[in-house]
Length: 167
Ligand SMILES: [Zn+2]
Image 1 (cartoon, rainbow, N blue to C red):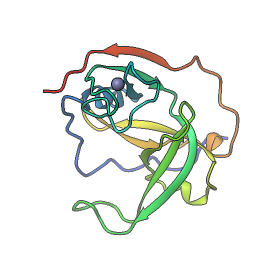
Image 2 (cartoon, helix red, strand yellow):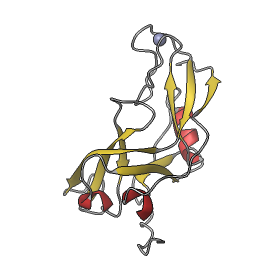
Image 3 (cartoon, protein in one colour):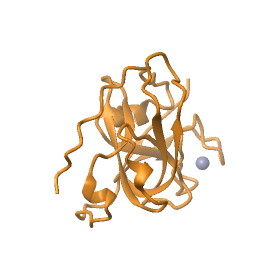
């Protein structure tokens, strides 16, 4: 059944400012894609994108595009505006992505949809572009996913190698 919820209001606050080591993350986000780095020394994805590998200190990463699908881990409601004019209360969720156990990603929930969900509920992270160089992670406004309906099969995650050197 299609969603009858209104689209969330535009983000009236700060826009992320990519730096050398987060630029690939934000560029993918601006295209609506969740992409995370991993080093050649370890198959684990890294979040947030670090300037260098915490294990071997290499600064070159492979960037992997993820599905955005995962399970709700937790959420919190923020009652105090974190910038002037920020809507309150606002909800931020932690999502465990399907591609890697033990990793937790943050996503805004402008509609407060996770308030009615149990931990482990299927959710999807999407990125709402807020500039040419960044997007904000949000819980998808997709009622079928939130209700646990099957998700159409997609090809697996895609990877690309982007030489990444910190300044
Ligand atoms: Zn490494």
